[in-house]
Image 1 (cartoon, rainbow, N blue to C red):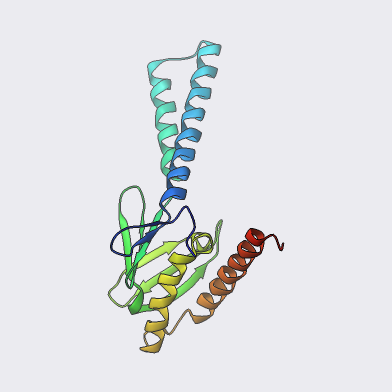
Image 2: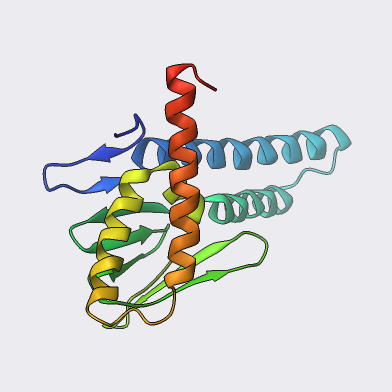
Amino acid sequence: MGRRDEVRDGFGEVTNGLEWTREVRSAGRCAGMMLVLLLLVDWGSGWISPRRAALWCALAGLLFVVLYPARVSAGGYWLASRRLVREQRVRTDLLVSVRCVDGVSQRLLLRDALGGRVEIDPEVLVRHPQLWFRLDEGARKSAADGLLLCGVTAMRRVSQRVERETARAVFRASGLE
């Protein structure tokens, strides 16, 4: 069952493309609005100068970089997360570690035997079951091969969450909620 905001290409790749596009636009709007408001306040108070305007532009640019979302994609035994500057990729059939990292926001840290490392928001996997399916398929192969020694519990928790949200979506769509 695919959702409307999942994109598939001809090679079986799945990504959170349309949702990612909306999040990029939202980050741009937030940064732009902050820039406009700061420039208006400076202009209204009479303190505007080229130097202060450059400072506000740099601050708005920094806000955009902080808010820029990761584009997560998955294919045959790989998962990638592309940020503004670089892409991180892991081989899901060679996973050696899956950990939940707590902090300001919960993250899922994936490491493979080749040294690849990807950190993603588990909510992306919950909202896009096809991404989760690709990750789970590779992780099961990795566990069967004896590589995945740390992270079975973390995978089980995410799996339960994905299944719960998918069931809710089915009930909601069928009017049984």
